[in-house]
Image 1 (tube, helix red, strand yellow):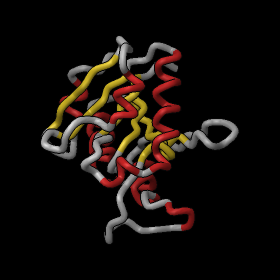
Image 2 (tube, one colour):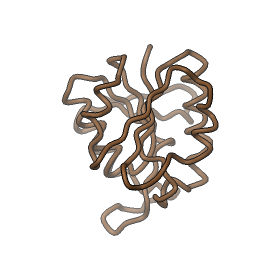
Image 3 (cartoon, helix red, strand yellow):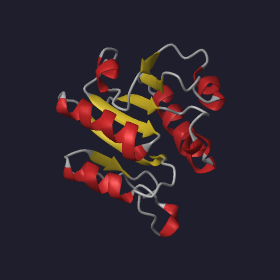
Length: 163
């Protein structure tokens, strides 16, 4: 399946962007997209600085990339302007806010949206329930599934999508 990879708000100003557990899955997603010459869109929140260095380094010299600057949690309008594909694979932070709102917005516009579970992070907040394994975004992914979004679980032997 052809898709565009969208990386949301991986900026050092956000605590969740510094989670070491996100680095490997996000780099895996970038490598996979680059291997198949997929479009990669990096969305960053204005006022919060540049995208984290390890992502910029990985994208250096890659031609099929775009950078999008957004001003609020939902980056779907700005992302829509540069998308070249109807299938969208999303990773980044904050899963319970910016990732979720952008994914929902793109879905409402008619895009087929998948969230890559292990490549989405969130900070610990009172309104996000902590569960075993430090999975702070379980409620977000349940809500995403309820809204018709797809969730990809790459650590399983095959990719499982729930619709």
